[in-house]
Image (cartoon, rainbow, N blue to C red):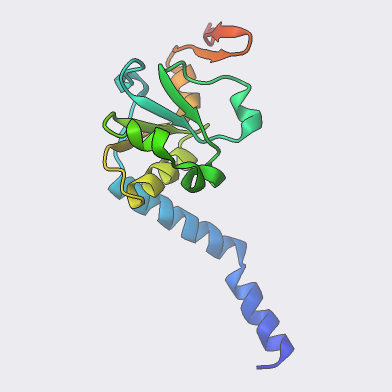
Length: 146
């Protein structure tokens, strides 16, 4: 195969529409395998939450659960350690900003052997829109709705 043919095949594989289609298919598959729960179903005292947003996103606020881990999605599989395994008897809820990364994170944990894992439907954005508070270094905040 000559260079031009190789480049053509490369660009076919990297076609953004094709990649987005594959991502959509991955998310649909994850939705079939992973239960999503709403903001009202969260038990902040007994569930373990994993915020899989990026570090700069954590500073905007987190859901104030008794047991929460802030582990970016790209590092999740490498951050699984005894601490997380030791709380796996609790329901583990993964969340992100809007829901997609949380869903994929929950699927990754399921693939690693965690059985008691779900995703927060709509992510922290849905949590805030439902009138629930978040916590950051300044304190607790609730979205004001007019």
